[in-house]
Length: 267
Image 1 (cartoon, rainbow, N blue to C red):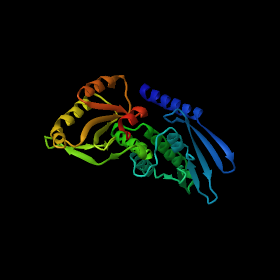
Image 2: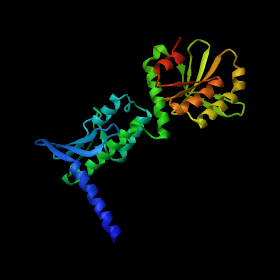
Image 3: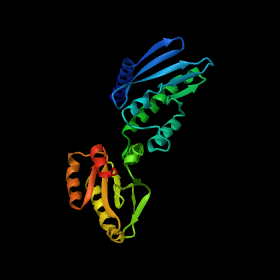
């Protein structure tokens, strides 16, 4: 019995905390600001706008703040066909929510009784979409590649590159390259992207480089180099970087744009 009593007390305490940290503020005759008890990954309180429309419907919206907040910090969510945009659409689809032309996340109902549910749906959407600023490991690489492609496309006069290129090794394994940069006419800079640098990545990269030795020998007209582009470097990554450099494999951090351009921009 004590376990049941404790669980009820914990639930009541949790609900009381939510109530104390949330509030509804009337703005005018047909709008209410709902300041929730939740914060986004940047520490900002999540607020929603509840609107009673003239056609007897109700709309709950984040007024575009979620996407604006994320994109103003340098993360592009709304580029068509990008990994993040596809994930965003999937989240909205799950909650039957919509995205306006101004990137408001919203949902409308004709039932007064459903307003509480659509508040929950929009809140869930906002929290999950906010998390896309960080992303899971499986999606982070795709997001990273989107960011690199955006950068070099926006600065296309300074970069010469190919995508969709692959090479076959002596083992008959085929290796996809994320980018092939050309600083000079005969430069061919194979580039693989990784969100982080660790022991497994280092061993994999060295394996690719050794396995493609015959390919490189059969293409003597090109000055082929192998580059690893990581999202950022930390102290743990340094030892692996040093090891790869000893095998003539370059490691560049995308966060260091000066180093990125020095290694890949047209010279």
